Amino acid sequence: MNRVQHGDWRTRSLWTECNPYEPMGHLRGSEIADIVIVGAGFTGLWSAIQLKEADPAIDVVVCEAKVAGYGASGRNGGFAMTMVGRSLADLVRKVGPGRARATHLAMRDTLKEIEKFCIAEGINAAISAPGLLTVSNAPEQDARIASDLRAAERLGLDDFHPQSAAQCQQLVASTRLRCGHFEDDALLVDPAALCWGLRDAARRRGVRIYEQTPVDALVETGSGRVEARTAFGTVLADRALVATNAYAHSIKPLRRFIFTVYAYIVVTEPLSDTQWSRVGWEKRMGIEDKRVMPHFHRPTPDGRILWGGRDAPIAPGGPNPRRDRSRYVFRRLEESFRWTFPQLCDVAIDRGWGGPVCGTLNCFSSVGFLGPSERICYALGYAGHGVGQSHLAAKVVRDLLLDANSELLELPIARKPPIPLPPEPLRSWVLTGSQRLLQRDDDGARTALSRLALRILE
Ligand SMILES: Cc1cc2nc3c(=O)[nH]c(=O)nc-3n(C[C@H](O)[C@H](O)[C@H](O)COP(=O)(O)OP(=O)(O)OC[C@H]3O[C@@H](n4cnc5c(N)ncnc54)[C@H](O)[C@@H]3O)c2cc1C
Image (cartoon, rainbow, N blue to C red; front, side, top):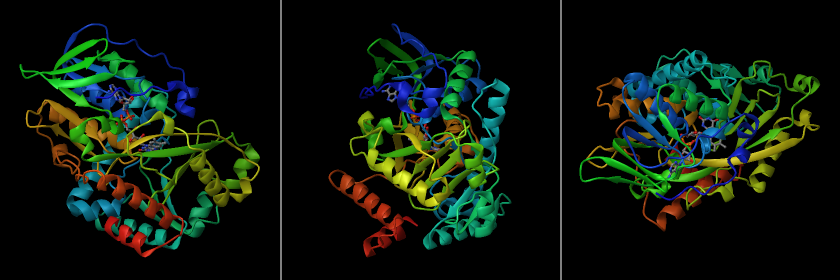
């Protein structure tokens, strides 16, 4: 495994800047454990907690290259949503109505469990459950809203409510909104506070967590165990979990299935009461639009508007801290913010940041084993929706690593590697080319090729 290149972890996002945090020390010498987890984002920490909840005697060690939440988990928009795949309609299309319904209901349970866990553990992650408004602001997006609503009806779900333009605009004052749907089950969180709260919850359960400890290699030993090798010592375990998401780019057998895109966010300065009154937004729910590469917006606990998404450039070489900021994307985000809310022309953009997202060709996450020995498990590929999905993935990890027989193992994310990507140079050409086409299509520059790319996708 390559070492993560370190940037200053504190300045990775508004969330990491504003929450207090004391990193743990690094590994010293050699240790033995039942399970070693590489990576302390949501996936690694939820998995450690799930394993301990299932069997308190199990000995779990987590090694994190930088600090917990250094990756996407400390930088995201904080939307915990039910979405698996590109949308509900996409999920039905890809796995059929029965499995789509089971997946959606599993995600609903998972969101409830996240909220309940945080309350029980006293994790102050500014969690709210205001629902999710998904909106259209262009004709082709109207059709996507309609197909989600048809999918919800087909699955007999009672948590998607159609919204007319007037209803959308009553929820948030933007004349750009043409129609939408409102989903009851969605949380908003402060992601760094959640991640850091999970670290402490894991420690309280006896998980040993070493930060500033990059794992250089995970090696299966002759004695049927796995050794995590670091510059400070080794952890010898029966089984391992790779919970490095986009950073798994450095692991060849996983790189075949995944690619890295960067997602970006800008935040405004805090709004005054008068400025808030110009947008309404009394429910303070999260909002996402129906571009192929969507925008997402939400109020922050300190009264700003967070505005993310739009461009999602491919990073062919995997995560690289040099990509953590992009003036070009920040400018485009500001442009769409001003287009949506012209009444907030006196509100300044305060700052922006970005981070690596792990994509798969069909936008499905995947939890499985690397190789037939079933010693090394992996969970990754949430395609920008890992705040909720990582909790479900962690339950699948638990059942795989504890050899449990559970219904969760029948979900489409379990034990099925994502679709492989073509080898280089075709890989970069296909990914970068299609991403550019779809982005231009989202911006209204439609071509025969972009239509074709969309038809394949949708
Ligand atoms: C800007 C942005 C906005 C987003 N918004 C949302 C959103 O609103 N809702 C949503 O659901 N999802 C969102 N996402 C995606 C979401 O954040 C991720 O899907 C999720 O955090 C992935 O969690 P993870 O634990 O799998 O990976 P990560 O959080 O990336 O954690 C991986 C960890 O592994 C560590 N690591 C890497 N290599 C090594 C090594 N060799 N040894 C030890 N440790 C290592 C890294 O330092 C890192 O801490 C967003 C992502 C970004 C970047």
